[in-house]
Image (tube, rainbow, N blue to C red; front, side):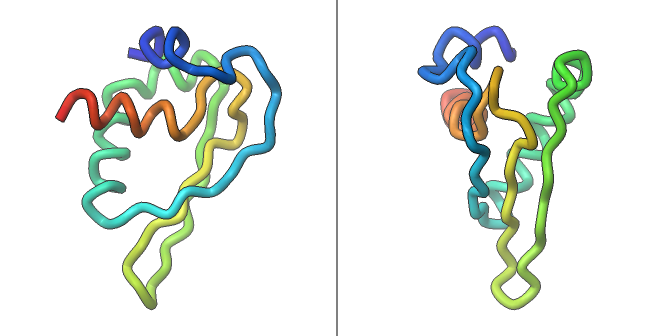
Amino acid sequence: MLEYVKRNSKQYGDIMETEFKRLTEDEYRNFEAWIRENGKELYENKIAYEVRWGKDDDTYTVRLCDESSYTLNDIMLDIEDKS
């Protein structure tokens, strides 16, 4: 799965600033499912993510702690491609 992300990432190999992305509850649920499926590869590449819950508007703000190999946008595109 992450090989797909590597091949399609414009930033692959670049060190870049990580940004937060606001997700709806459904988007976050899909993100969590993707993480469960690809967790081993994320762990092997030492990639962590941070989540903040917006209790006032029921959104989740997510970021990858290191986007030098994979970006959150690429992960979200992979999720959309599977839908």
